[in-house]
Image 1 (spheres, rainbow, N blue to C red):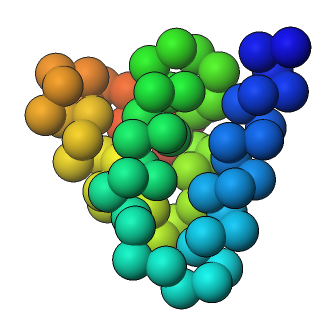
Image 2 (image 1 turned 180 degrees about the vertical axis):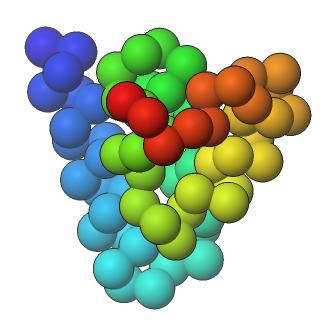
Length: 70
């Protein structure tokens, strides 16, 4: 069930990105949460969001999770 919810949230985030929505910080929070929980890795983050996701991970003291290796 949790995996399905993660995929749903990521699908919504990707949909918003494709629309050109400027909600990057809010969408990045979803990715940061899943990275910290171990559901996805930084390598799974879309390129357009990586700088914001990395910034938020560093602010939370989790900058070590912002690497391209899975």
